[in-house]
Length: 95
Image 1 (spheres, rainbow, N blue to C red):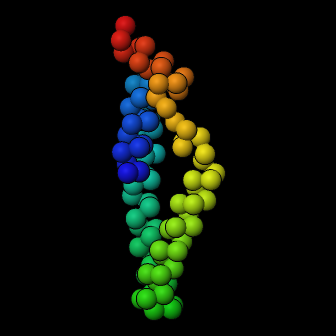
Image 2 (image 1 turned 60 degrees about the horizontal axis):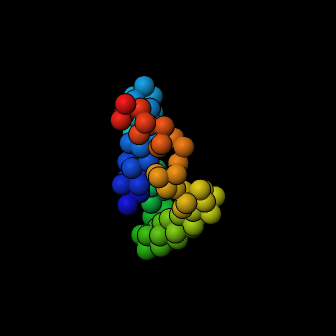
C-alpha cells in the first residue's frame, strides 16, 4: 500500500526534470529500511531472545506508523484533483 501511494503521488506531482535526482532518495528508503530492521531484530534477538525481538519489532512498527500518520496529516487529505502540483503536471502533459 505504501509503495502504491508513493507511486501515485510521485507520478502526479514530480516534474520529469527532477525525477532522476529524487529516484536516488527513493532507492535509499527501499534499501535502508529493511537492512535497518534486520539489524535491529538481530541485536534484539541476541540481547533478549527471538520472541522479544519479534514482539518489540511489531510494537515499534505500529508505534512508528501511528506517529508518522499523525505527523504527516496532509497525506490523508491528498487529492490529485485539487493538489496544485498534480494540476500543474497534468497541464504540462496535456499541452
